[in-house]
Length: 281
Length: 348
Ligand SMILES: Cc1cc2nc3c(=O)[nH]c(=O)nc-3n(C[C@H](O)[C@H](O)[C@H](O)COP(=O)(O)OP(=O)(O)OC[C@H]3O[C@@H](n4cnc5c(N)ncnc54)[C@H](O)[C@@H]3O)c2cc1C
Ligand code: SF4
Ligand code: SF4
Ligand code: FES
Image (tube, rainbow over all chains, first blue to last red; front, side, top):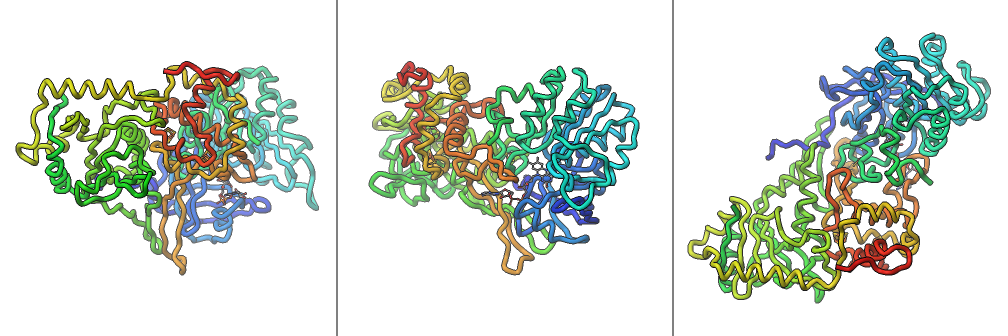
């Protein structure tokens, strides 16, 4: 009985590097101190990041591979993330996970795929494209669509420069407006994610992986349906308030499911009868 | 096979002795003219046998309002195990037993909650029969006959208690006072059955629950949510009093120097405005109308998807505790089942 360990026990991680991606957005490389501390991490899963004395926040796994280290792309949003932004290389923090189901990469094998990211939704989508490119021959056509409000918010510029040159991947980047003294060093178009979906050569047989701000889903889904895609081919990664990540605290409950366990990635036709799932104020 | 015994009410002090021998006895006591609470007791005389619903359900004994889960000092993190001592929880009615069953399912599902389970496993639960008042409706939600979650269940059959045993620990408790327990006679068995038939007839309110999940989903846009939600104070009274509500927050409490501290778990409520808020100011349930409807759906439709059971056990606590008078589960169900004309559905 006493051998049972609390599921809230974290593993130690040490910040190995910090890269400024855009204002208030940083990429943290975390070195795991316990070997195999976060076993079998999949693209689209998340961890509970703990800053001692401050609290925890759910953060998506951002790198395709997780071994001795992992990458987390974090936006300064509130208490925990601000405290993280105060930290330096060599500081330690806690991690629990990985949690959630992640994207169905096995089901994606042999299929054409479109990855759609809005804003910070690019963080989990990056773990997916890195994974897909590592096993490129297992998948069909790959299209990556990434949209943001302002051009200065563009994350992973250096990586996109490389991705844009690949012939086995079509990349569409769109910003709603141009802000700042200079243009990003990456070619992008003016418009919304939905405009890029219209442009892209997406056929009904594609599978779509989508992550973005809550308001984005409705419009993206409309556009994908207009392309003839059935709902069963559309996979949405949902964000919810999460405190535990393990189906206990109740915060992420939606319809009849815990987003942290049954999700965060849901197949659209499974969400259809879940009230509150993709509409929001 | 379940074993049945009887013992005379006059002998209850002996039974109490047996319970105290096992550990601290927690039982309903009167805390004001109208209210009761589970408290440690040292004699049978302190127990309020007449108590129907305590202010808080017994969940607080396994899952306290606030508890420390972890402590850390520098880089060293350690689990703060709960201070667990053997105890006997006496006087739990069928609705609350069912409520404990719901929490058991949630906290023991993988990954199990070591804090809850440590306290739960150190506790012998003695159930007690009751007669419904005008707020009880456990018979509508199928939690009226005690099936599990107890070690011993006592039914009041007049001059005696009829004791059903459901675990080795329960049997040991009954047998620890030689001569106290008599094997249940044929007469006693008949009295026992009569009690439950009469109890079933005594319910004053209720509904048929068969179509509930479907109706709740169908009536998601019913104007009743607006009507009731407008009156909700978002005070969150309805959730701590519910035997099946368990949502929590985990927060850090740091020492003044900041290099040590604790991770503390506290009860939370889905009726508070920030419960479903995420970064960027998005709130999935921004107003009291959204949150009240969510709560009703969860109680009536419940965990049918995630766990396969509904989560209202019919204790009536929310109805008596809501300052706005809008947690009338039975009334709302009858209205939902009857459609939008405000006419009741089929009463049982
Ligand atoms: C599955 C999942 C994956 C995620 N992945 C990432 C990721 O990769 N990168 C990333 O940066 N973020 C990610 N997030 C979002 C991140 O978890 C949230 O932004 C989180 O709130 C940050 O924690 P915090 O303590 O810094 O912010 P908080 O202090 O929680 O504040 C966040 C926001 O909520 C508001 N807020 C909080 N509490 C209240 C309240 N009581 N009343 C009113 N407003 C309030 C604040 O105004 C603020 O805007 C993810 C979330 C989920 C669910
Ligand atoms: S339903 Fe009643 S008890 Fe619950 S928050 Fe609203 S006013 Fe308070
Ligand atoms: S919803 Fe109300 S009546 Fe039902 S179990 Fe909870 S407190 Fe009791
Ligand atoms: S985050 Fe706690 S239940 Fe999902």
